[in-house]
Structure formats: C-alpha cells, structure tokens
Length: 459
Ligand code: ARG
Image (cartoon, rainbow, N blue to C red; front, side, top):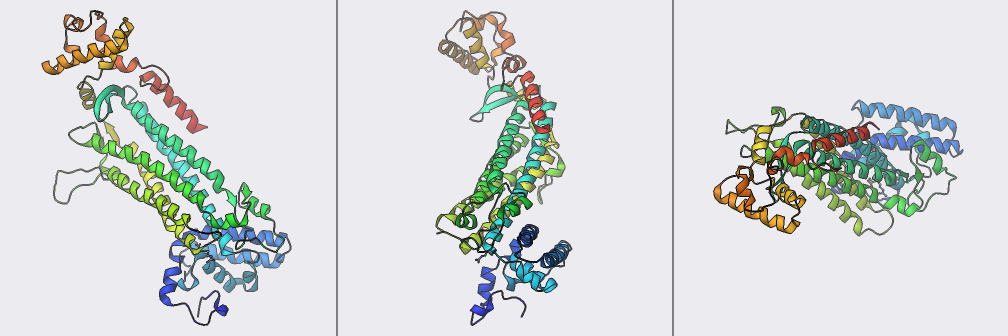
C-alpha cells in the first residue's frame, strides 16, 4: 500500500477515522514551496558538511525540481495516507531518486521542518501585505489630495463637532495603516530566524552548519534554543495580532463608508463594481464590500484568540496541537490579502458629494468652538467664553437658526467683546484654515501631510 511512514513500530494500521483526524495534507500543502525550499537548503548543507555525498545532493535537487513542477502543474498526487505535506513530498522524492531521497531527512525532524516552513510562509505573507498596505495608503492619499479642501463635518459621539476636510479624514486612515505596516515589519524581525537544526527537540548528532542554512534561506539568525525553536508559535500569534489591528482599521473605515453611503447621509457613493443589488428590491444598491470586511474582522480576531489558546497549555517541546496553527493562520493571510487588495482598488471608486458634506457641516453649530476661541483672543477667559457661546447656541436652537445668522448686536448680547470681524471665524473655510499646525485640518497642513506620506511611500 502507498503511504505509511512508520509502519515497523506498529502492529496494526491506523484506523481510517484517525488517519483523517490527524492528517493535515489537504490544508498544509500550501506550504509545499516553502517545504521544498527548506529541504534544498538542508540538503545543500548536508553535502557541504560531508554528511551526504555530492551525488546524493544532485539527485535530491533533480527530484525536488521535478516535484516542484508537478505541484505547479497540479499533477502532484496528495495522499491522505502520508499525513502531511512533508511526508508526501519526501515519499515522492524517494520514488523519483531512490536512496538519495531517503537520506534527505538526516539530522532533521518534521518538527524543525514545519517550524521552518511556517516561518518562510509568514515572512512571504508579511512582504505581500507590506506591498498591499503601501498600495492602500497610496490610494487613500490620492483621494485625500483630491479633497484637501472639501469640507465635511467632523464628529464626536456621532454628533457634529467641528468642520474638517475630507482629505484630513482620509489621512487619519493613512496614519493607521502606516502604523500597521510598521508593526508587520517589526514582527518580521522575529519571524526571520531559522528553527532547522533543532531536529525533534534536542538538536542532532550530525556536524550540521545552521548558519549556512540560515543564510541560504535568507534568515537573519538561527533560533538559539532547540526546544523553543520547534515548539513556540509566538511569531505567528504576533502576526495575527498585527493582522487583527489592520482589520480593526479596515472595519472602522467600513463602518464610516456604510454610514456615508446611506441616503440619509449621502456623503459618498461607491462605484457599482463594489456594490450589489437585492434579489427582491429593484432599487437597491448596497455597500456589501465594506459590510463584509467589517464582518470578516470578526473571524480574524477569532483566529488570534484561537492561536493564543492553542499555545497556552502546551508543555515543551513540540506537541501535535501545533498542527492546528495552520488553518487560522492561512485564513488570516487570505482574508487580509483579499481585503487590502479590494480596499486599495475601491478607494479609487469612492465619489465624494461635497455639497452634502457642506450642508451637514452647516448644521449643528460646527463653528461654536471657533467663536469661543475668538472671544478668548479678545481677552475673555476660556471658561467664560465657553459659557457665552453656549448661551448663543441655545438662543439659535430656540430660534431655529445658525450662529452666523445672528446680527452683530445679537451676538454682542452674549459678549460685548464681539466685533464685526467675528463673521469670518464663523465660516467653515475660516474654521478649517485656522487649524494650521502639524496634524491640523487646514488644507495647507493636509497638503504637507500628503507630501510627507508620499515621500515615505517612495523611500
Ligand atoms: N503536520 C505536523 C504539523 O503541522 C508536522 C510535524 C509533525 N511532527 C510530529 N512529531 N508529529 O505540526
């Protein structure tokens, strides 16, 4: 029978149910590329150290090259009987090149092999995600530039607070995704260490050269303790935590897009290609993409919890529990990659409705703080100014008008310090332009921030 990697120790075959229960090949075969890469680096080192012959090494390279092509072409036959990606590939290698294939596993265990594969996989995922985060930041920065002067109401508690620009609002997300990129890059440092050489748990009796393998695989260093090397998955947890924060930011943005696209708000429209209709209501155009992204955030959080819980009860060193790290990790990568790709694309499909934003900013006394600041500049202590403006707002609420609708005489009734120059500070443009410091919403500052982000993205 094809398969069965350790039959000599066993007096009966593993039951079919247990085989299915313990196998990982149908999800871990996505590690195939990393597995071959790791095996080739290991074999190269074995040959260089005289542990296997140059001829065996050449055979291993030949066999692995063919296996890589078979997998690429979808012609590789993955067998449940062979449990996981590692045993499937090794068995095929032996079929192709005989004894040389059987020598590959010298000085190695699946424990350090799988830990190496996952690190290679996470490293490449981090690199992909870095590119996608940069693309999303670039797209949001373009949108910010188009709307550096577009005024909208800024909110706190979902109540109109102060006028801001839409460009400034977009740049808030650019900052968040910038920190996400930093977190991913930082996580990469701890991912990028080589477990191989730890073997099952204690190291190996062969004269291996771990630094050589590390160098071949592009790792910065080796893991310095063999027990730790094969058993911890903190690097994967850290990656999932960074991914969860990316999704937190995606989800907050999604929530805003959904609200903004509601006809009751009408601040934006999202291009048809990112929306879907209703099977019953012919008029509908729903923001499904941001809604789904908000929903998928939940599963990414769940994967983080799953991995943390997976590790917490494991004694050193490797336990089969660790095989459960893969599906949450892979799904996190898939969800993140798809979401970032679609959001970078969708940013260009957001059309802004400046009139609706402006109309909303004109409601809710968005310039009340400007009036208070004005009175402070005329010499009134801030607390008194706050009180004077609060009374003015209350009078406006009763009269059903805006602060700017009051006459100079009416305004002076709340504070005699009010002069004719007050009306400039009550305009939306005056309000945003006045917040002219690093991090402020003034269009001048928004443009400076855009230049800063662009320089960062280029460097
Ligand atoms: N499929 C296993 C995993 O994903 C590979 C390591 C198995 N090692 C073992 N001793 N059973 O973790």
